[in-house]
Amino acid sequence: MQKENITLTMIKPGAVKKNHIGPILGIINENGFIIKAMKLTQLTVEQAKKFYAVHQGKPFFNDLITFMSSGPIVAAVLQKENAVKEFRDLIGATDPDNAKDGTIRKLFAESLSKNAIHGSDSNENAEIESSFFFSQLEQF
Ligand code: CMP
Image (cartoon, rainbow, N blue to C red):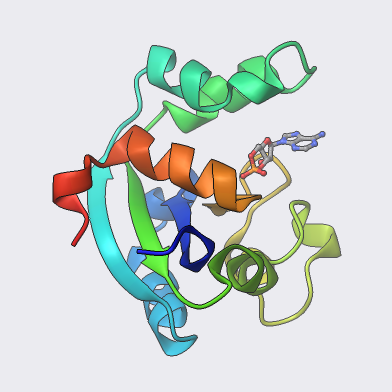
């Protein structure tokens, strides 16, 4: 897989709890993304701290770690041409109050901290984040 064509997503605990996995995956597929790897899992506190290490020290860090380790998530590697940008357009702004109509966060986010879904912010991070959840063998 060419690295500019993949991104890593997580459907976050709030959206999983509210039974939004199916509708969110439907939107992802309808918009031309192919699911290359996927798992339902739960982050430990330590894993969440590692995944979000870039945010360590920020005022929202502890709440972010507590939330992201609070329940099951769906992690998936998605493939599409120009995947990172295309997916960030599809999920909408980090703060759902600023997300455009029709975006996944506009439809499913509860708040800035419970914003339903994650998308990688660069090709480099897409690779790092995909490796965090999936070994090379699991991606096909
Ligand atoms: P995401 O970009 O997926 O990963 C980091 C998360 O931190 C972000 O989504 C938000 O859900 C959360 N967060 C909470 N507070 C803030 C804030 N003030 N600025 C940015 N992100 C925040």
